[in-house]
Image (cartoon, rainbow, N blue to C red; front, top):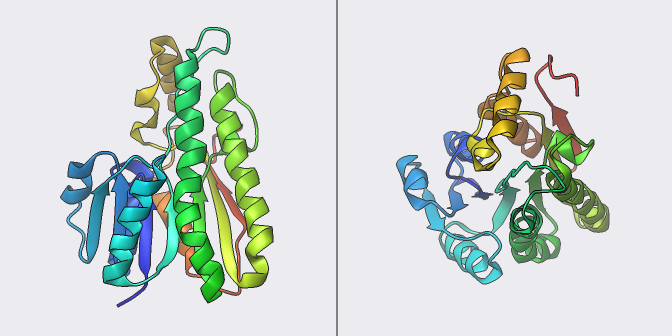
Length: 239
C-alpha cells in the first residue's frame, strides 16, 4: 500500500478533488472537515473521514494518529481548509476577520504541528499548503483574507527553509479564482454579485481538479526535489 495522505477541507471544492486524485493513485487518505456526510459520499477506498474543526489541535491530532495507526506515518499533509469572507474594511464585522485568521492560519498550523516533527525525525515527508494568489498581491474587499494568505506564504517558506536539511518539503500552491463554494460564505450580497459578474469576464474560474493536478505533480517529484511554489490562474485573469 502507498503512503498516507491527509487532506483538510476535504468535504468540497479543491480538497475533495485532491482526495479523489490521491485515492485514484492508490494512496490511503484521511479526510478532515467539519461536514462529515460529503466526505463519506466520496466513498473512497482505504479512506477515513473525520468531522473536525481544523483550529482544534487536539481533535486534529486524534484524527491523524488514528489514521496513522491503520495506514502508517503521514507522508503528505495538504492544508486546504479555508474561508473567504469578503467585506469592506470599515464595516466588516470583527467576527468575520477573526474567523478568517483562525481557519486560514491556525488551521494550517494545527496539522503541521502534529506531523512536522515526525517528518523531520524520519528525514522525509511533504506539507502542501493551499494558499491563494491573494497571498501575493492585494485586492479590494479582500483585506484580512489577503493578510491570512500572505501569512500562509510566509509561514510555508520560513518552515521550508528551516527543515530543508532534514529532507522535508513544504510547498505553496497559490491559485487564482477557482469554481468552489468559497464565495458563498461572504455575507455582502453586493460584493458577491460584483464578484460573479467579474468571473463572467474571465469565463469562470479554474476547475478544482486543475489545482489538484498541481498538488499531485508537486508531490510526485522525487523527495530530493522541492517545487517551492506554484501560482496558477485562468489565462484571462489579469490580476
